[in-house]
Image 1 (cartoon, rainbow, N blue to C red):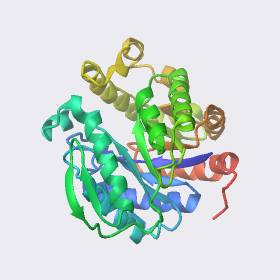
Image 2 (tube, rainbow, N blue to C red; image 1 turned 120 degrees about the horizontal axis):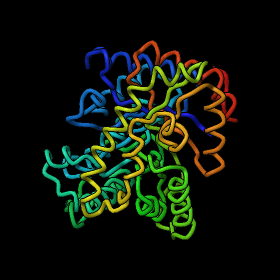
Image 3 (cartoon, rainbow, N blue to C red; image 1 turned 90 degrees about the vertical axis):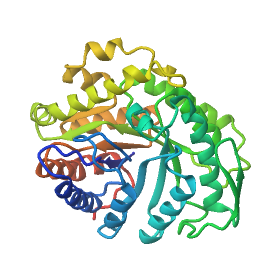
Image 4 (cartoon, one colour; image 1 turned 60 degrees about the vertical axis):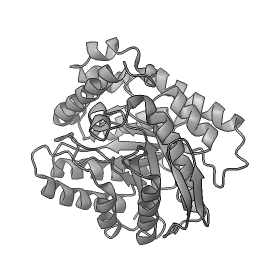
Length: 356
């Protein structure tokens, strides 16, 4: 089981400029400690919890400070404001400067504010993602890209640069619904379960849906199929004492959860997001951190042994990698948590771990 890191430039107690440089230092530390992957999402208009709107620029700086850790966009939003050719070109550039450490996770947005600001109809996001993915895959592989789809029409063009990794960097999708997991399995790409506050049973349903779809699909036309299954842990923090961990992470955990609820409640009324039909239980417990820590795989706050036990449970469910969002608790606290996970958790759960 691999342990990765996802951060989104939470500005609690700092400025954007300072937080970006702190992030770079934190990823450099995570690289030395044996974390498998680092990534950030593309977010707009949502401070203070999210401040990274141009992740590809930040990734290049981080690539120069790290040596081993994979650098995965989590996620590139494949809607009309991000042309898939631009996504492919930026990914290839990162793959080159990092010497083959780039990966890409894609997504359709679940933020109605962002969708509205960029003029996207929420009912069209799945079609835009599907067609954008077709273009992205062609752009990474084909000598000449040509495409005639429901969203993108592209005459024959040569894409430069091509990725350093052959045939292309690993591809996955951020998935919150069972259907999105199944779509990923059919396509032969990896899945990362995102924002999954719906509990362990729902997570298992998503993982089972993905596995069944992947195993039953015909991937003969897929150049490099992969069945990677990641889990995004929306709030994580590790300390020697469980109560101390929950004290430090309480505010950021509850603020993030309420931010997600504010997205889910209106989104559940939109076509194409019908998996958000039952929110009553989450609303009922929106102030209960202890309940969240036990009920949902999206919160992991506690001691190193708590982390080890939870990760072993997730591994048995079929998860390959946990992606811990350790952010918003201050630079020094983040570094202490990374050190604890790197020294005590990763060696206990990742058989491929090699002491730096």
